[in-house]
Image 1: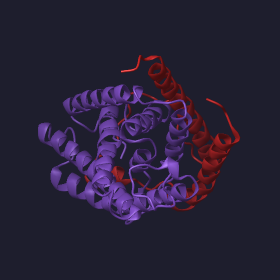
Image 2 (image 1 turned 120 degrees about the vertical axis):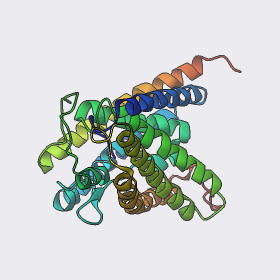
Image 3 (image 1 turned 90 degrees about the vertical axis):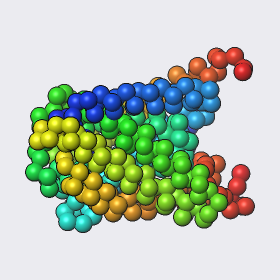
Length: 97
Length: 219
């Protein structure tokens, strides 16, 4: 797999759109519940303490949100690259059926 | 739609894990025979893009928000088996790194967002492949979110039936609320998916599969 300009550009475009979209998110939607949280709220159910404490959260302000988005982006990118690369390698080493 | 820990009846969560692992194992097995080096970066950028897209909630009615799920987009770009893997990677990173969705409930989150949503997308895209592309993508995206929310509502209802007062939410609330809110969120999902798919079809048509193509767009 080569790292070419097109792929680097795709990463920059996705992160750029995210940074712009996050402005709208912080102005309009931050702090509002999603569909499941709203359903829980209407049923009078409060979220319990999680069994597992994650090392990160999405952050409480715009700069942290962008930073966490970028960290998550690269964590997913690297995980997916690794897994897909492993599968491609296995496929190449398999005898023709 | 990320289910937190402590909300579902433990056996529901165990069943969720069983189904998720089974579906993921099949997806990996199927993809291992077709995965090429060219598909690797596409899958990776798609997964990372869906991750950040899921962070961008948009408002709907009554102070509620929704965000892109991305199952139909993933199905369009990499096909259903790879889409299950892509969505699973997103959900696993969200859970382990950011605590978005419970760890014990992750099996159910994988079932709803990676398995059900992708399966519905693939089925709807297949049955609507001869109609206009926009209509086909809209139907698939809308149905993927709606059915995933219905399944989530049913999981909440089953948990409530098995351990009333301890787990889940009664079906009279869970099913109408989940499907009602997500039927609106699904419109946002459909519009975003159409926009991205249309853009890809224009600039890089080979990236999109499972839809009817205009003769000049077909490659």
